[in-house]
Image 1 (cartoon, rainbow, N blue to C red):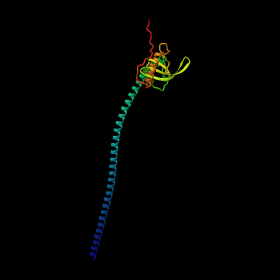
Image 2 (cartoon, rainbow, N blue to C red; image 1 turned 30 degrees about the vertical axis):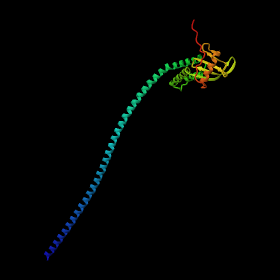
Image 3 (spheres, rainbow, N blue to C red; image 1 turned 30 degrees about the horizontal axis):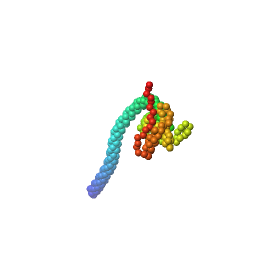
Image 4 (cartoon, helix red, strand yellow; image 1 turned 45 degrees about the horizontal axis):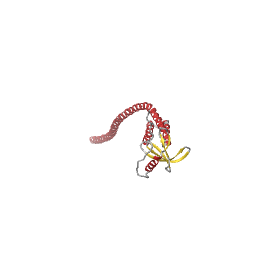
Length: 258
């Protein structure tokens, strides 16, 4: 009887041990699962961190390359600026030298131009008095032009040369103009004939009288009758009324020195 009880107790102990062993094994399995889950989570977190660091590294690498590229561009840009600055500095030096040269040139040119205008003025006053108002006005404008600070030296010089060219052209042309003249206190309407600077005559509108400019005496002289028809034909030819003809005009000449 006792032996049977002992066996039962032993069986119970064995069963308890089995149950406890099963429980222990189950606990160990559950712990392993939890540990594996924690490891997986840690690995996932680590991988996420690694991925994030990789992305940041890639971004930094791209930014570094972009920075190097900008540095190269700035280096090239600075080199170009240095060349431009050097070129501008050279232009400034050249401009200063040119201005100094211009100043020296103007010191010699301005008095020369003043002298040219004075010479032209004297020439017009001593020349045959054709178109006298326009010619004197041109000279007066040149004097005023020289005092105008807003006009460049080159433009002043150009105007002076232009006036000289106009005076030169007068000597190569035949012209006819209608105007008025005071003849011994009587105002006459006449036709002026100018043959270059060779002769300057006028005829009354009826063609019956006239005069020629005596350059030696600087006064009008009565035109001899022998020239009236010839001068009249020259006037008609100059106006396109008649065909070309030979004509005679009086030409005063200086007497030979005795």
